[in-house]
Image (cartoon, rainbow, N blue to C red; front, top):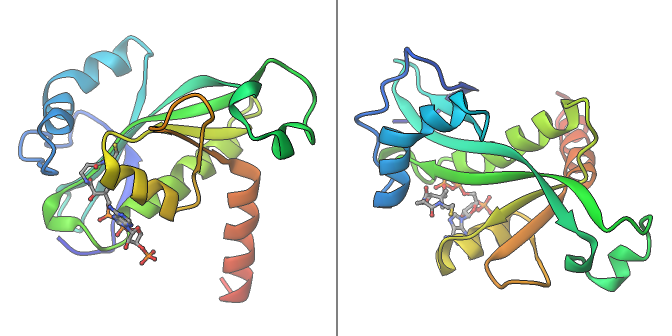
Length: 174
Ligand SMILES: CC(C)(COP(=O)(O)OP(=O)(O)OC[C@H]1O[C@@H](n2cnc3c(N)ncnc32)[C@H](O)[C@@H]1OP(=O)(O)O)[C@@H](O)C(=O)NCCC(=O)NCCS
């Protein structure tokens, strides 16, 4: 599988059965549980499809809250003293083994930021829980910062990423 990929909401026409990312719980969730979560409004799911419509990856997005106490003091003092900041959680994110290394994981994060910026309720940050050390390195590489409360939790302020995306697009004339 090679780019270009199109990212779109998961629909009935997408074939989920053949998807494998190398992490069995993430594959199983996508094969067996994701549609239930969508139906119950627990999560939305977005998939990347290649030129022939095969699913190259997926991620899920849900509303969440970021406790102010999870932010470093430097960042917290620039914000109003609300106990909980509005956030959006990337619950699961997975790229097919046959599509990895083409920038799709990073593109999912930009897609999530774009959706968070477009949402009518304001969203301060994206949240993720890294399932292991490799995933933590991946998120840290993309600019996510560690939460104070637990080692596997990370956040990414959406306004910062949105500014970077605009600057990159302007620099490349797009
Ligand atoms: C982790 C995963 C999502 C990466 O997806 P991908 O499409 O191969 O990643 P990308 O090609 O978008 O990589 C984007 C950048 O992150 C870097 N990167 C990727 N995986 C990394 C890792 N484990 N550690 C550090 N950096 C990593 C890439 O080198 C790339 O850097 P660059 O932009 O400077 O060139 C994918 O390997 C996967 O699905 N793994 C199994 C499931 C999983 O771990 N999900 C994480 C959620 S818990």
